[in-house]
Image (tube, rainbow, N blue to C red; front, side):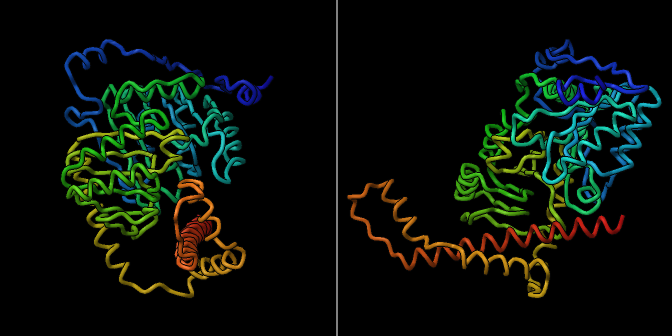
Length: 417
């Protein structure tokens, strides 16, 4: 049986060529962790200069390449998408100088499964130890890297040209021992398909503790929430935002909120958005891979960090405020009716309108199931029809427009490289 067959059939760790994995996994807290707990230190709370902010597209690929190049013993990397040859070469070079490189590859992503399997083979040929995630969740969408068991990179962006060079996104690099060890434990669990139990509240992992921790994080806002999120749709989270807004909290969102919320301001980023980041009261921050959507909180593997590192907080605030001002000027510009994305959206809405059945009878039946068929209830069928159809058309138009714009951006990028 070949190494690759072992990978596919049994998901055991395999190696080809020069790679010899020397990584030791430690699931339980070690002496240093226990000492930190006894000292009452908060999880992922920076001590000295232990956390660094990565801003895309400004920082580019250099910090990631440097991290791999400086590895002396181990590199553990979780990959959902990767099209950067420079990262592959850095991993291959690390193997050549004796570093044990271990890659955990997603079993699937949207439209790129063949590319993932080819990536596995290339990494195996380069001497990288490769494992594949389970298929028990909708997706394994997390992206992080651990270097020498001492440095953790938690990223909102993939290892791709589009995310790194052409999108607004963020990442953090931390040497906080507690956070690093929690990531090591998660990597081992997902590689070996073991059960993972979070031990640090500020290491946010979907679908295990993300909903609880992020809801509490939002609830704790007293003055302001600055949010980057391409798709806020979870009803419970939207209700929390509405409650905070009614309590006087200023809420600004760069991205999309699927329904209107009183007192919440929303704008579109001046460049493509691939960030999930929340700044609370200018003193605390969340950066990770999970949106405030049901599927990313409850059905996918996602990873993020909550911190109070002021350098990171202030860095994101500066970028947010700059993006907010630019978004304001963009909103004032008229929409080009001849833009391909706009034309495609109009065409899709027109086609949908022809096929869409009357919605008032459907809604009336659903309401009667809830309140009872004998209840005195009069519904204005004409008003319902108009309102629901209008909402569906607007939603479809926005989704199609965004999908076409993103597809065009990816095509332009492929043409460039």
